[in-house]
Image (cartoon, rainbow, N blue to C red; front, side, top):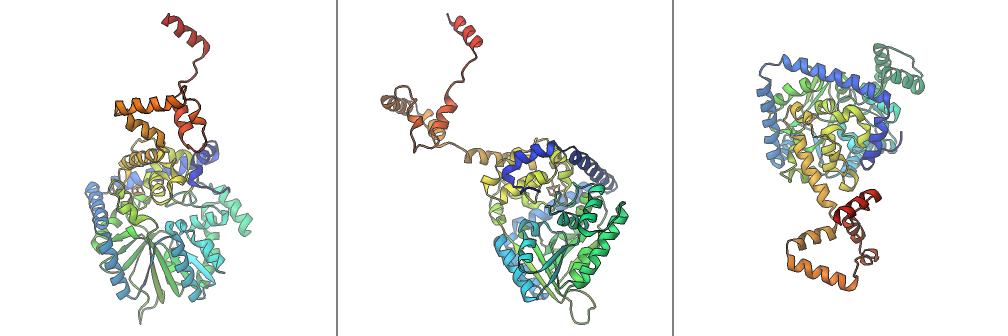
Length: 461
Ligand code: SF4
């Protein structure tokens, strides 16, 4: 697969639009998720109140984030977890590679984690000599295919059953056709990796400041295995994922699985408070928590856009988005796709790479109506568009707008320019005045087509 980058969003979207197979697979998958979610929410008494509680819990956390993170560090440390702070992706990679080296980890098993995708952890661990295995079925599939995930909760949503069967045959020499057969093949292949693993790496759906616990939700049991079979467990968490109390975490857990997969609760919910204690029979002997910033504290400081950090990554806004339904996740060129992905990537990556992302949105509002946290994606998208537009401002356009508010100064500037260049056609060609040619070209009236020009001339006579 070609290198995908947000900077190539338009081009990648056009290519995705032409892919009829992708459209068919996405149509099937997004309908499935929307149906499951709707059925689950219909049978969720008091859902609006639960959504409001979840939103309040997230906004409370964001409002007190620095304090809560310090509280989390203190309580996790007291529980025996080693807490690390990473300012950016490079630092986070270095921390995890350092832990792996110290543990002499040869085989590493991973639970699905968008934050480890964000920091490109696997190549760093592999470069350090470790064998890294994704153990979530969808992640395992995209790892074998050498592709990034294309959905927050369903990484291989863009692949059909037939695609997976061919992939398993090609990469693993394993042959199966039905979904249960393919799942069993993956399960057998991964079982021996769990048993051989020295280290397990996971994300964190949330961490609780008051107890120092890391909470992980999943349906396959692979995260439970990744955090209990190996001797060392490393959890990576982006810093906004902290919940103040267990009660707040419970409010979030009530809405996350329902909104993500249409389940009342995920099959497995692991609450890990420190490593295995004396007398306990399972759990990692060493537990680390890496708290990643990677641009988020700047977003937090921005009142117009901070709300994007309230996201709990349920993925529901992707499924209802007409743009995502058409182009899928890879076209966004970033690990985060769909409406929330366009926002997060625009906020966390440099603007020159992401300037088209906020414009890849119809502003239909389906995402905001679906989001259990009531995040107002269209409003945030418009705020980002405004920033991109002002970042693009040509200095001559800006000066022109300013002068236009002061008629005397405007006339004086035009007279001075005409004194040196009577037809104003030489100055724009001068080198060393970047933006002037573009400014002049934008103000040049378009050439009228001959018949129209003739008619207009006649009207004037
Ligand atoms: S923005 Fe809302 S709907 Fe989208 S993933 Fe986040 S919580 Fe879910």
